[in-house]
Length: 293
Image 1 (cartoon, helix red, strand yellow):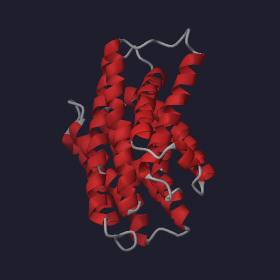
Image 2: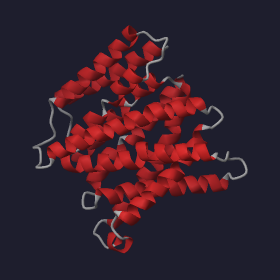
Image 3: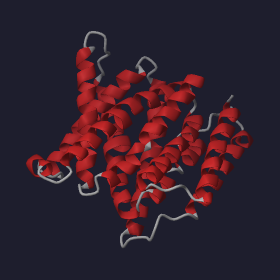
Image 4: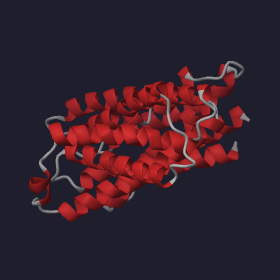
């Protein structure tokens, strides 16, 4: 259980980077960052699979199809929508809305033997933290703020479904290791990223001619390797070792790290309300861990 918890928290720390990445390369289109991140994820997965070709398990046709549609739900589709949301609404509110994923996953993924009363403290603490954070808006809303909020809700729904369906898939296929599944998802995600780049992205010569291209490439590689490939392996480990409801609670760490990275990027301290919300989020994680012991 401890291994699963640590893996889930580490995945959250890596995922938190994707909330500040669009702001670091704000001169580039969201679709280009999405495509770049997932092409990198796909390339890393292909390299790893090629290097372990003799040992790696080969997916069946049904397993390959599962990896393909789950990759759209949890990676290319989810992140593209999230990037557009961050561009329209800033970092804090999309991070807050995505931060409700733990509540939805806990509600929808509760183990049959676990009483609702045991989950209630963690749910209430998380909800209180979200409500408190909502009282601390990030600057003055822009003209497309409401559109950004709607996109954030859509991305939240995508990843909630992915978290539940991915955990169910891993439970049905215990013979598939966390790393193998992460690499299969990576190949599928890389194909999706390449399709996005070719159909909707900026042509590569034009992209490389833009100011800030080296930073863009560095960010794409960083979140492709760290926030996609490595984070997916860690999340698969957590999904195999923990119940869906506890995994859901651990997603709160993504919100905490996203806010931390945003404050560091903005060179400012959190407000008192944001400190209090972070404390409530942390207490919610601890309460949920206790409930699942």
